[in-house]
Length: 79
Image (tube, rainbow, N blue to C red; front, side, top):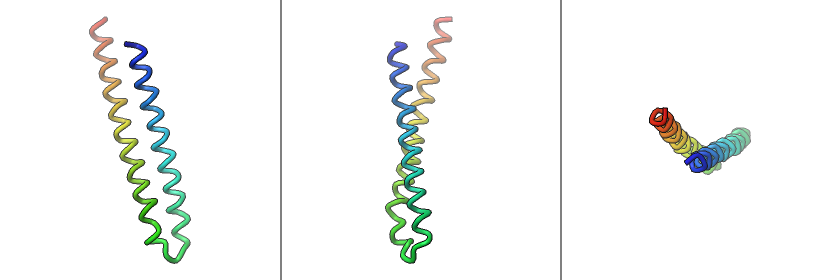
């Protein structure tokens, strides 16, 4: 059980890192576009990437919360 929890937590933390990196990349693209004349049209793809990154972080946070609750119940039951 410990290995499964460790694996899940490691995967969740990796998912958080991917989401944050996507958000950084997308926000950098958006920042560059603000200085260009046709930035609004070109901003759609980075804005969608930013929303995707937000969703990934939110879902991964939910996974971590479930893992935390499961571990808490396990500790309560074995104590």
